[in-house]
Amino acid sequence: MKIGIISDVHANVANLHRALTLLRELGADVIICAGDLVDGETEGNAAAQLISQQQIPCVQGNHDRAFCRAGATDWLARWDEEAFGEMPQSYHHDVLKDGTRTYLRDLPISLRFEWAQRRVLISHASTWDQVTYCYANGRPDPFYRIAAEAAADYVILGHTHMPMAVEVGGVWVFNPGSVNANRYEPYASTCALLELPQTRYRVFDLESGKPTRYLFTRMDDPFHTDDAHGHKDHG
Image (cartoon, rainbow, N blue to C red):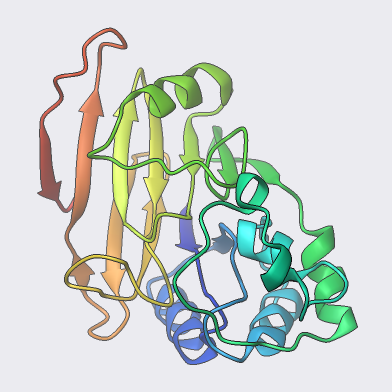
């Protein structure tokens, strides 16, 4: 079973097409999206429409949640940092249609699947909200909570724009990075492919179409926080 994973499109329709084409060329049986379809470029309507038309399972990201509210031109002035997270430094004013906002509003917070006798949970930022940042080289506590609460073998997240693989207590937590652009050097646009049941995970650069490095961490002991961090192509 090959699962294509995308996240944080941020209205970059050209890269979205690249990601979907690449994953299908790699033999993806299904493609899933960890949210944030809008805000970044000015093609939020097209990005949401493409995901909807191709029936790609998608969860609601914090930017989707913000943009789906009525009066999309007003929400910038009323940004709720507790609900949506820290306000980014700049925004493109993407005018969304009513139908797009309805689609974004109705996206689920999380989705669960069972493939190849493995349980898969998809959320945007964490398993409990849409704004917590889970970094492979950051604090381990969020990953321990995910492992304890997820009731899944694999958890797919987005939000950080940083591709990663974290193994904690037998639970794998993956992030494919961002279809739009990752936030740190080399600022690549990426997607990922997860093969089950053997747990082969690869992150792909959208420009080259080739596997690229990502941050890998193993946290075996929930009471031990001195973890080794390194860049790997797992699998």
